[in-house]
Length: 584
Image (cartoon, rainbow, N blue to C red; front, side, top):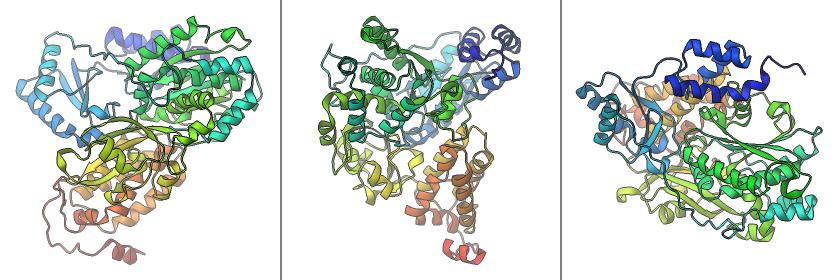
């Protein structure tokens, strides 16, 4: 196979770019030219990668770059007011070299609102505290380092006691019962827990059976969907299970290299994982001759250069290879041609963490943990308008009502529940009347939603669901990689139309165009991002239609959230249904 000049250097690109940015604060053009020459990579390729990712700056940034998270959970918990207040505070203080803007989800949904100051992430700060910190930076001071000390929380899914980790891989290598391990995984029914839900055993078998000696195991720890933060919790408290799951995947498929892809905002978790990997290397669990056997398995961490699109499995592979994270056309699938076009297993953090537990405790135990015919335990991140946002480990099949009112402590400020997203913006919104739906693959699919990545976002009675649909659509628009026209143009068109509705400028005939645009996005987008762009507004039109009609027909937001004015009489009073019939 022909290779491009410097292909072997592509994975080093991001480390080199980070070092340049650390020195200069951005990526000067002369430094990029020098780097291209040093690693023998075409300058256009290097510039293309650097310009794609939000982590890198091609021009000098302001001395204080403040970014307030603007998505879902932070949107619900006052991010908009915080940003407006900071803008006014900066204006009054005359901060000339300070910039404030928005940023996509920072993975701190349980501590919303979150913000980043010069890429240092903070939560729980008041407007005055933030303004004072920015003032210190502008005066030449430094930002406080907030690296949390995490006490390990005992999780029900952890089969080991202290000091007894990695017994499953020890048993497997001693017994060499590969067939038995695959049969156990198949009987458990374990499916991918990052969103797609593909059977784990089938994926691993396909890679095992693929020809060729070079194969890869990749863990996707790039959770970036608004409302999603349960993988951060798992990496903090169960890093040994994630790593053991990857080692088991390597032994069972014949792969000798594993890469754990983690988002750059998870610095604490990266440190935890590095220490766990060092511990494994010292114990002979990683490297040549794992536990004295003929198996070799090396594991390294790849820190994402940023972007929600990196969570798409083929875009993630492109990033590891040092390229722009643009999704590949499928087929071929990663199990056939994945990293460097070699057979590759890609699974989510929670999926890998489940494998040692299933193989150690057995299928009967695993199935006994679920409810209503579901199997296993599930980590769910609960955020938004609840008293106690956080990650909860519950039986698969637990009703949403239990997550909200038992674990989450009910709706904040003693308000009533209006709606909820079972799994962030990709799942759309369901009404309060459907809280009896269970958190499992089938129940949520039957309800017209999905289990997804396990991100339950709760909306109180005074929220505007059209506003929430617009917020979710803006996220997808902002995070589209732009590779395919339907997603790039369609997401922007949807944002424009929904913005018009919130401003009272829409027309009832817009609904037909929404339907047509949504269909085009679902059918023609290359990857899942474009395909789910219509999900938020489609669900709101289905379950909260009267609220949308009020914006368009009466030019009024019932929740008094949107900028549209009071009701007026201008002839725009015919219904959506009538408008569709007239246009047809």
